[in-house]
Every structure is written in C-alpha cells, then in structure tokens.
Image (cartoon, one colour):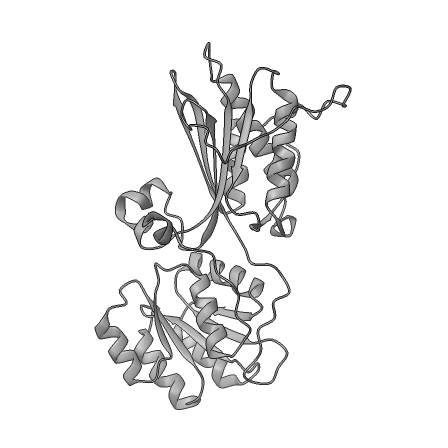
Length: 327
C-alpha cells in the first residue's frame, strides 16, 4: 500500500484541503463521464498531522467505492468536509458510541456518499473532468480494511454504511491541529512556556503531548501526582504552569494543588475533571487553582486558558459543534 505508515514521524502537520482536492481530482479522472462529483468544504484553513499520500488514497478510494455501489441508479458522488469540535453535546452516551469514543478535540469531518443519501445543495462545487489527453492518474485503490487502518493510524475513525437502494457512504473523522510556529510567551523567562501535565489516562497524555506543542508550548507529561511533584521539586527544568486531572492513581487534583502551592505559591495550576461542578470549582478556587475545566471540553480550550495565564498571544478559535447545532 502506497504511503504506509512506519512511524509517527511519517505524519506531518500540513494543510488538509489540498490533500482532499488532489484525491478528488484523482477520483474524478477515474469516474465515468456521466457520473458527477461535487464537493463542499466548510472550512478551508483546516490542518491535519498526516501522511498526505495515504490520505489521498483513502478519499479517492472512498469515492470510487461509492460509485461502484450505485447499482443501476446513476447519481452523483457527494463529498463534504468541515471542522467540528467534539464537546458536551456529542459526548453523550449515544453519540459517543456513534463517534467511536473520540476524545474531545477538533476534527475534520469528511462525508462521502451518493446524492441519493446526501442531497446536492447550492454550495456544492462540481469537480470538472481532466482535460482530454491528460495522463490518467494512478488507479491504486485501497480495500476497506486498509482504509480503516489508515484512518486509525491518524487517530481518527472510519465508518461505512451500505444500503442496496442508496449505495455506500463513508464517515471519516481526522484530528485537526494548529499551525506550527506559534510560540507561547513564557512566564519564567525561558524561550517557550513549559507546562507539566498530569493524567493517569494514557490517551489524554498522548493528546495533550500532541496539541500543546502545536500551540507553542513545551509539555512534560506524568502519570501520577507523585511523579509530577518529584519533577517539580528537582528544579531540573522550571515549569510555567501545571495542569492536572482531578482523579489520579495516587492523589486527587486538590491534594496535588495544595502540595504544589506549598512548593511554589505563584505557579499557576489548572484542574481538569469529568465532573467539573460548582462544588469542585469552589474547593479549587479556595486552594488557589487558576481554572477548573471540564474534561469533555475541546482540548484547545486548555490552550486558551494557558495563553491567558501566561499572557501569550491569542489564537482565533472556530465555532463549536454546539454553536452550529443551535442555529
């Protein structure tokens, strides 16, 4: 399979739309002339950490499979892409099952299907066939299992829905990332702000260790409060802020907050919790916490809070899924 992922280094922070457009151009050249291909991209500034060649293979293959599933009915292939924020509304029990348990963050949501499933609207753009005489593109296509493996390697989810009357449709979520090179101003005088993050859930540590560097922060992750305390006490690398989950394997967030404040009273501490109620906020504020954030919020809200604490330059934020759902 072209573009196989051999390591995390194969994933590059890059613009998403050019990847999608190249895939659609490939698919358009392979589709029969009578089959239309239309697309709509709601946000053209999305970025992903990905393998471009492999993602192109996924999107082009999905278009071809959607065409092959049409049967006797000749309709159009419809592709839609938008950036969404997984937050409280989509993290209810039913939606979490539908989305494969995705962690709260920003995603590029790509839908690919037939016009019988996805009606063509006024904002859809038609992908024109290539000029006559153009060299045909690669006919390489991925099997469904390869497509799923490729999306999973990008920390996303891949779903396929098949109906004999409506054809096949594909629902893909890929994590989006911030542009590189946004350095956060440090409160301790070093070049880039250093954040200590504490969480016993590996998935959240991996997520934070990916998102914060793109936002311009250095981050050191720890599984337990005791490990984080030893690191802070050692003074081997000054930190500018601490972010801790409330429920840890050894301490709770309030206990860790108290001990940090005894060591460094001016060190900002943020507590994140799956149950961030008023009682927890009151207790945290009493002991000097800077913020209490819900763990179900988009992790980029953590970047906003850190920038506010450390007086870093703000980064513009797109609207959330909740905002759009209320329109």
